[in-house]
Length: 205
Image (cartoon, rainbow, N blue to C red):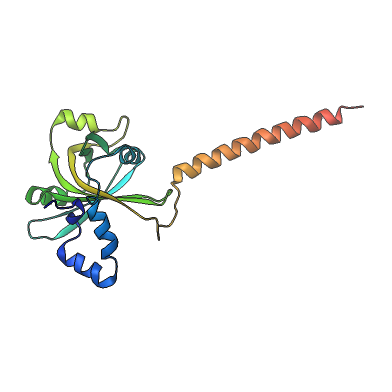
């Protein structure tokens, strides 16, 4: 029997709740098609190129969960293979909760949100830290002022896209600033043209 990849999230208990609340039929059709996607597609790779913030969830051996923010320049998460992504892990508050959790339990979950386009992507997989200097250097974004302490490698087991329902649209401050700068430049251009036109009109006898 082929186990659908969506079973990584849909346990028997969850399926029972879906059945009780009327959504099981729809997800059974998803399972019949194989479930969630399991390899990094061109669309997912393109999405990752625009990501500048992420949340990674881990749990220790006792099952105690922990979620942590990770960020960097757009594209700081790199595609390293058909099922592998990674990023440079910068020095922070030095609590090492995620590192400790992964040393005990390599299961991990990555949550990515694109507020501007109202999209969110969920990735299930296994993760590990690496202290390989060459890999850290490869993953470190050029010119980014941060100290890379290690690298995080995330092996994708399954991923899925959520619907945009209830996602508020928010625009990145840098994108807003660029749009306003372009507008202000265009206004200044038009004002200069108008002033020049007025000057020519006053010179007409």
